Length: 277
Ligand code: KIV
Image (cartoon, rainbow, N blue to C red; front, side):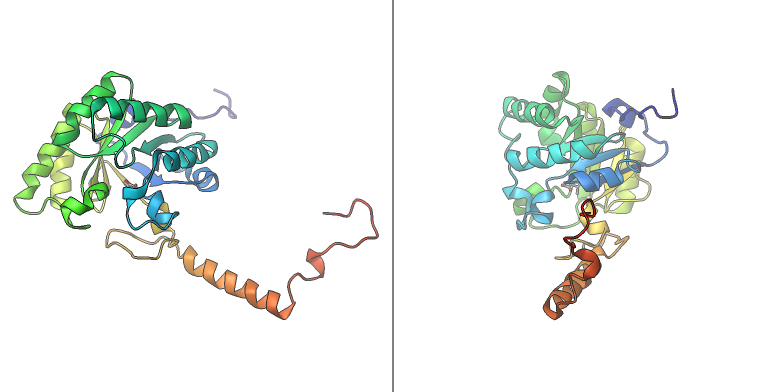
């Protein structure tokens, strides 16, 4: 391979075989520039339906549509070179029947170039996952706190505490047996996440789970400090870009008001042809 050859993006099977190996790194992305920035650092990038809350100001992920996912999926795909792209199936696009799930998953993959879809649910979605995988659609599952079900879960609560741990373990086993190549564990006790990771044969991707998971994912705008409406306990802000942006916008507004911006270096003279840049 030449030094300039492009690195091949991992396939779902490559992700599956990382079980128990070096931790998988992933983040959500919704735009081309952010996808470009994370591409060299991530094994896979998720076009999450969190886009509805993070970029569109929706109160939950329930209002996210297929069209929104496709538009953001296409934008992210333009920024990726070496990371695999996984795309979320939005609420209402897969729960009704296996056929509905196939139709919408195939559309998401063919119109965006995603290598896999992610859907929420455990035992109750196992049959759908088996149907999709048998027809060429790689599936990443998502159990624990499943934000599309907040109305039946009663809010964004920790899942799987106490006796509920067995049901969560059954969910993770069921999606693995159905053929999912990885499973996201969201907002579950660390000891349970470790047990699921030890017992389930596919990689676990933690978010609010445990450092012992086979990989981690965070919502990009959370970890950059760009989304500040609220901060979950499991979010670590690796930067405070939201605060920096507010200061920059206030500085701009002040300089415009004072007429100190634009300054001489930002405006054009009319004398020298070719000096227009
Ligand atoms: O939509 C999303 O961003 C997600 C992650 C939180 C895993 O599903």
